[in-house]
Amino acid sequence: AHGTDHPRGAPGAPAGVNGVFGCPDCAMTFASAKDKLAHLLESICPEGSAAEPDFSAGRSGAASSLGGDGFAPKHGVRLLRRRLDLQMVLPLLLANPVTALDLEGQLDPFLPAAGLQPVAGDGDEAATVGEGVKAAEEAGSRVFGVDLVQVYVPSVDLVLLIYTPDITVAAVARILGPWLTSAAHAKVLCDCRADSEALNAAFGLRLVGVVDIQIAHAALSGQLDPATTAAAAAGAPIAQLPFFFPTGLARLASVWCGIDDSMLTNLKKEFGAAFSAGARPFRALPLSAAAASYAASDAWHIWAVYSALWPAVMSGALEGAVRRLSDTRSAEFRDAAGGNGREAWEERLSVARAERAANSRPERKLEAEAGRSVAREPDVPKRKRGTQEAVQAGPISREGEAEAGVQPAKRPRLVSGPQCECCGMAFSGAAQLVEHQSGKRHKAAAAVVGLDPPPPLRIECRQAELREPQLRAALQAFGNLSRVDISTQEGGSGGSGGKATPWRATVQFSHGSGAAKALGARAVYVLGDDGAKKRVYVETAGGQ
Image (cartoon, rainbow, N blue to C red; front, top):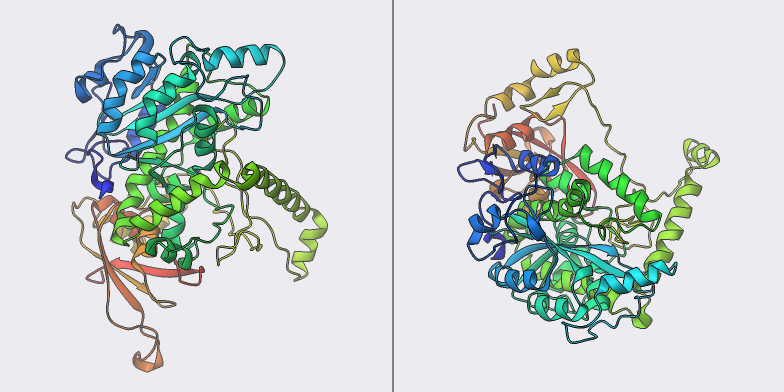
């Protein structure tokens, strides 16, 4: 199973080496993947002395080679900008069965392509992508083009930023083709449609071996119709997938990894404004620290989410379904009849925005207060257009139909006051924190936070039967689970005193910090078979 192929200590790995996560470029170590990611995003490297990256020596050689043409102002990042760099790195890519992949650039193939054919020239004397883009933009045209290909390589714990403007189209296609088109090498993406389309339009490469973490989460959480997942697992024809899922990369990182990075949010806003103005911030060298952070962050976060959710995919026997659904997803824009997959997406997006704006008018709010049903679009995750995450819109029904409107879930209230480190919760003031720390939930959490492994936890649900994939999806937000056991005892009726018997499960967290957060949470919910949230109750298996 390829979910276990990443090294311990990689940014998204469930555990570091002996519980410690190390930076590939300095001696600093961290207690969690989340802390390591924060360090990588905030780091700034001085220019080193090596002439070019050296990938022949394995992890230590790659990690020690900073500077020259391989310099990128960020720990854990290398910039590759020559054909020789690609030729040297190909064996490394082929040696890793799983990597994370992302693109940056103007990724709309319906824009002019600067007069370049996808595989024109012999790879040595042909015009580079950058030369064609520069000529077109000097003439006042916005043009299609891939500026960066970002790859997180777990065996060396680095993000490679492949700068394509200085490399011929044919050279990129010839060197990276054996990896990108290999079904034996899994490429992990988030909403793979735009990247798959762009790789085909720019380099004539059909992306194969896709694992889309948005699809994986949808299959685990019930956002995707279970019948569709079952059909994919059985090799049967797959119905049209929903055009939108209400989970972009930022939300997936929050749900699965507990990552909510304000620095990254500010970067998204800054670069989003640049993209909207038609700028190409990843074509300008030297690459700034902010640009390196933005480009590398998606690859880091994709890998972190993959590492957290893939054990649940494997436990639910969903690997085959997710792989097949992901490859189907990757073809939606690329292979749409008449080439209108993206156009249909854009049309749906415009409609969703208009409806959302209409539903936010004061008179519609009054209608809702009067008890009349007002359907509104859920918050829109993102979609690529020169940036990894652009806007993604609903609506999406509990049956997985993109056309049916639903009432969106309320946004959680963000509290920025004092925090309980044990339970992972924030409070509006010191008094509220003290009150929490005197309560039963905190005391139960404090009793297990320092235990590795912690005692098992008992889960009870009084509303519906518990399913392992949904339960894992809900609890992985607190920490990695090493075991989930669903009780065979039938729930729902026959309890003493006429009360319903709850459905039960026992779970084992890998670390006490995860168990503590689950015990300390105000409320925990899982998705039922009907797509509705069901509350579950968490306590130590001894009932303490």
